[in-house]
Length: 192
Image (cartoon, rainbow, N blue to C red; front, top):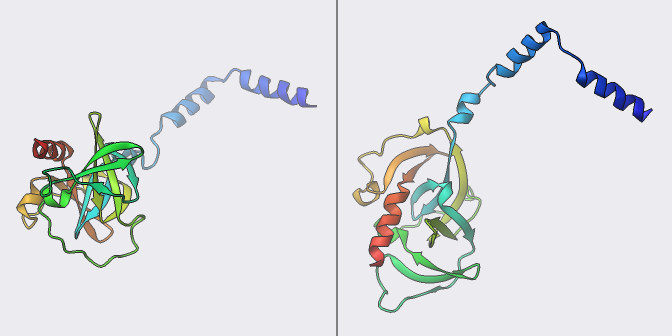
């Protein structure tokens, strides 16, 4: 019985299609899918919070997100952007204070359970180098249509506006999209 089914299936798949059936099948496959345009234009950013500011960076720069851990201060580096070294997955990683770089206040808004993860150590990777920072709250990856990005309003603090390329409306909030190249350049400049 199984052999008869296999023979019948092979005969069905090996049959010749007539010209009309072949044309209909070609038209069906060539027809665009509903919503395909939005799939092509979809981008992703990793969303996190520093103080009261929600920020996002392209997901390609995120290496891992882990529980907060001890940060070991470096000699003669007690102030500024460099916080010290942190052990992440057995690798010593430079830890920076992005809130210092962006000159954000220390005001902490009321914590909402909207996020997937609370305070976390976020590890970025760029050109073979890893850098970590502490985020007050982590949402994670968010996909969006690039057409939904808006210009940075003039009300954004000047120091923050320097690093922000656009803003994204998200969950009744506004997320500042960070310029990754400028961010890493500013961090590297502070290391010297």
